[in-house]
Image 1 (cartoon, one colour):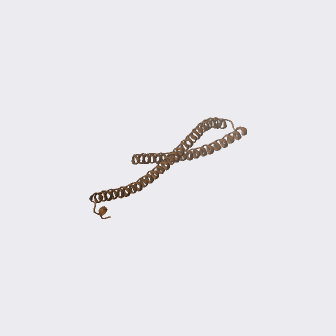
Image 2 (cartoon, helix red, strand yellow):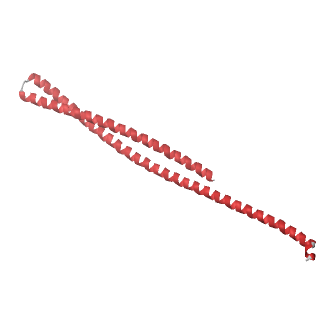
Length: 177
């Protein structure tokens, strides 16, 4: 035993072994720390990927909303266009009736026949009704225009949200890289 304890080769081997053992222990600790850092990094990457998915889903929803708003705007524009055509038709009818009233007024001045006066009153009543219809049409048109402006405002707001979401997605892609 004294031979083994006093052996220089064994001491040298023991010193080398202890150095290698310490290096192995330090290497193992560094490896564990690296594994933990990798787990944290993977978790961050996963979170960012989830955020990107959410942003893409939100952008798709906004695109759907914009499409729906565009459809509604087109519908409202077609309604306004048809109302304008109706109004033009009614103006033509009013002009014809006014001409008839003028002609009847001339005849009423020339002939005082009771039948023509009755017809004149009927025409005047029709004229009054048409004027009421015209006013109603104008009110409906104004309402349609107000709705159209509101829909355009919603569309612009939606487009701004989509643009902001797209920017956010691009920023997240840049961060991931």
